[in-house]
Length: 259
Ligand code: ADP
Picture 1 (cartoon, rainbow, N blue to C red):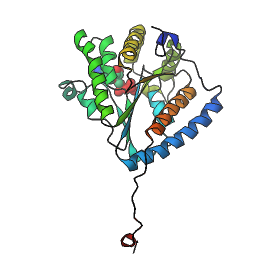
Picture 2: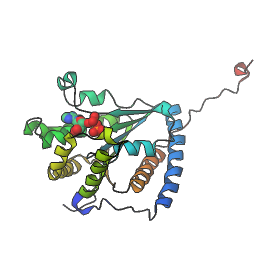
Picture 3: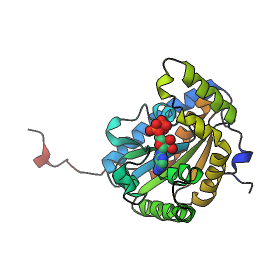
Picture 4: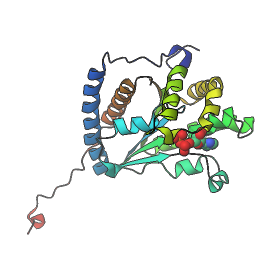
């Protein structure tokens, strides 16, 4: 299927609409500032939320995106949740239990570093659940996101798309750079060996869970500067569409005069 979400057709090294790093940096700075101002309104309004889901293979830049896009956003109204391997209590519930508990409260932005999508990605590649159960999860996810959307949460999902060669370089750098070595997990090499299976699982995920109420954006992520600027632009646009307003309170009466 050729379409805007066809991974094989999307160049991970693309930078459009930005031609240069400087141009992207200028736009990113402006968008980050705008996101902060809009977030302040969202918080004051206190009725709606924004959920940003970040998915991508190891080294695709999920952490770097959070740092790069939200570094100007007031921390008061932002939560970041990283989802690792489920714990025993989590495994004793349905796969969405831990996710639902972490969704952003009204007035805030919630960022998911990995998410419920691991349950149709790593779970599919490593057969962590019966195939039929994984099949059903796509529908469960769409219904769950619909619930969030109907309840006032705008959902943005980003797949950070890097090339296999770029991942090789980044893993190699992690292995050798003393400041990055802590991030290197030998287990990541197993995932790399399953590269094709992961890409196939990502494609199914994109095909089955990009909905009107929770669309996916595939972000070319070989160039970190383009990645951050592209994501910031989408987040800013979404917040502008939400158009949060400061509550209109009238404190002008004499009874409210500050004594
Ligand atoms: P990161 O690699 O993102 O820096 P961690 O070291 O905590 O963070 O690793 C997260 C690991 O947890 C990944 O290998 C990921 O595949 C795994 N994981 C996350 N969610 C699930 C899940 N639902 N089922 C199985 N494994 C999961």
